[in-house]
Image (cartoon, rainbow over all chains, first blue to last red; front, side, top):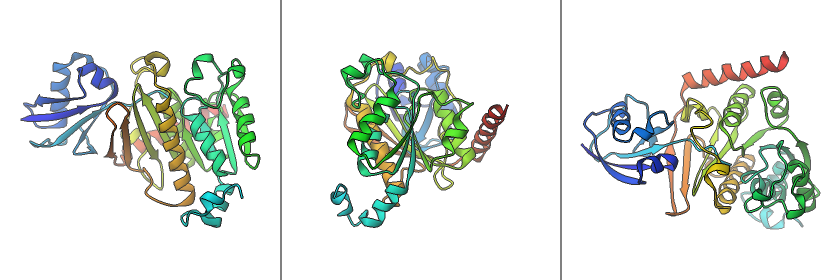
Length: 78
Length: 253
């Protein structure tokens, strides 16, 4: 399914965009993470969480077409 | 007289002002986030403010750490900050800790305060604050920045989620850079630190909606703010409690 993903912080830098379409072949958040890391190897080893429809979710959560996805890393700076 | 314009707000009033005067707030980090948070908290009449920072003022701090001036370069941040805040509001009692928050001192320092402001610039300190706050059952107001983006949340507030519920594992320090490495526009910590002070005031006054269970993100380049829901994760809470306990044991030894 085709998703629109918002990327934040250093994740956006690694992916090269803050908002982009992504074709997800699997159906869970875990699948999404694997596919993202295959497409963008710079994400491997980076710390981030996935939000689906403005809600932080676990790896088992299923993703539906039209869901709004955000990839959020922690920030260190202060 | 000093507080007339905020006492005039029905949400504050004389009762709210008294609550502020009785509050004990600890600000960990007197840098980009800590400076504006400290200024507004002192100006608002928060009665007792603790400041923790082991650093000295560096010239490269001055574009964003607005409590400090040219002549402060080389001086301990907490001493300069305390002096400026006293000039701003002599009614505020200020305690300084010219050291970094460590496993050895965190329990002792944090235990004297009602609410903690995480204005630090590294993950070790952020996870330490989380775990010690959970152990001592204190809420803390989180703020963090990256280039043009900021995050704000309130953790461990009335049984709400903790920092570990949002980001379970501490990233390696070299994985995610801090401001010294990536650069930062001075206004960004100004805005995020001021947001943190706002949440502190709301919690003390018991007004509005506290950012507990929510992560707010802000991007200065796109003017976009978003709020994400964060749920409590009991497994992570337990892990944090164990870590907090470990900190205490280490301290006792």
